[in-house]
Image 1 (cartoon, rainbow, N blue to C red):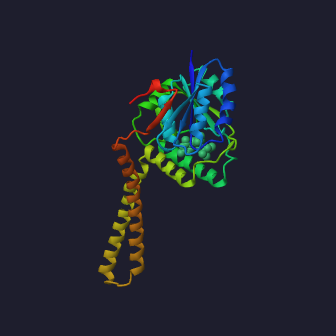
Image 2: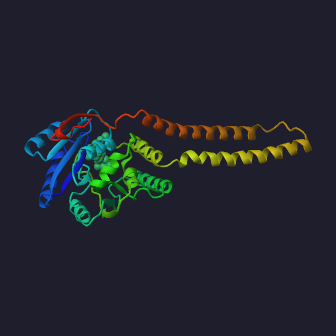
Image 3: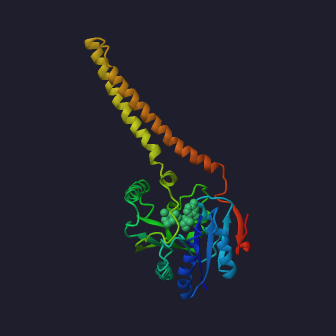
Length: 314
Ligand code: UDP
Ligand code: MG
């Protein structure tokens, strides 16, 4: 019989875990599949891990991967994918922003042969205006740069078949932008629209700066356009500069040296200096990530496995 794995990354979520558990279990029990709930404790500092242990003692279908520190949601998810043994795997947030009822819909599409069933947010009314605006901008830029590698407004909430998960696990990179990786591996996909409710309990864990870095990770992992842009811009500026040089040369020959020119000189120096610094910065963004990759560090470190000991790997 087929087996379903839910992967739930949790970071300081003591208020949400029980609510989540009681919302999801009745839904899963209605299905004819066996299932496991893999909670990935992402280095929580509150009672999260204790609550998970209590749940596991009462219900062995609850399994725990406890990471050695806070690695971030992308890495917690990667750890979950690694230890999940389901024929279908569903990553979910613990705050019930990913509506559990959708699992039923996901499973029906999967039974009909879909390899990836993706929850797509219909609107972003529960987000603030700034988040909505920056998210829209990110999706536009990312899709343009990567030729539609990701779906608009799709997060991690989705169902993936075993072969999708196995393909994801074969990708060796240590900087992991899962949304992009899901798209990169391909396979057939079905979109399921849903409305995202507000958080059930606890607080959001993605301050603006973290989101900005997340966006940079995404773009730099999937597009080299920002790097290549500078050759074109540089070419254009060099051409303009050359034309200007010819103009100045001719003018000097015809009318002699004119000393004023401080303003234009400053403008050129400052603009070029700024552009050079920006381009160096972008090279730095990529170089930093190349550095991360060549170190070949594992994407996460496990402190403790509960209910998954037989899956211990090196
Ligand atoms: N999360 C995590 N590690 C982190 C930050 C968040 O595992 O460093 C988990 C968090 O516990 C939750 C999910 O990722 O289950 C989504 O987090 P959150 O609700 O804060 O994000 P948002 O809904 O704002 O995207
Ligand atoms: Mg949330």
